[in-house]
Length: 125
Ligand SMILES: [Zn+2]
Image (cartoon, rainbow, N blue to C red; front, side, top):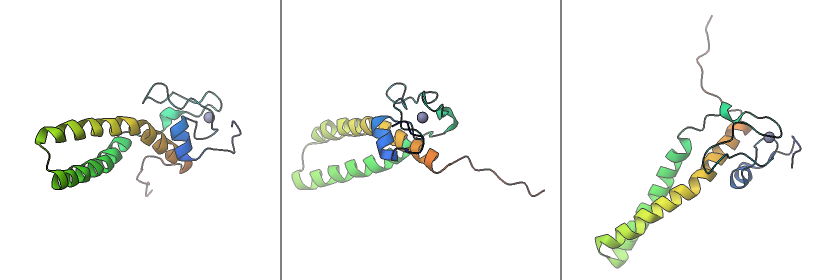
């Protein structure tokens, strides 16, 4: 899939680690670190600024899911406090680490697709 007009869907690019422009593999250089650029089409990945956006989304989404699960578990089963610790801390870490790569990949693909750039104040002159 190296046809420049066949860009992968953002979720496909994220899950498979594909370039958001040409679909060539190699978006990531390591588990969470982006490669400097695409080896096929030379898209400069460093020009995109995903920043902490993926982590912020995951904190909100996973935090809500784990909080609801913990509350429902406590209301239904009333387990001791250490059961909550044994359940929710590893689950939170696993969900966060497991989904961070995909979230970062989706954000960079969406930045490319929507030509998102840093906001600038227009000159009035
Ligand atoms: Zn590419």
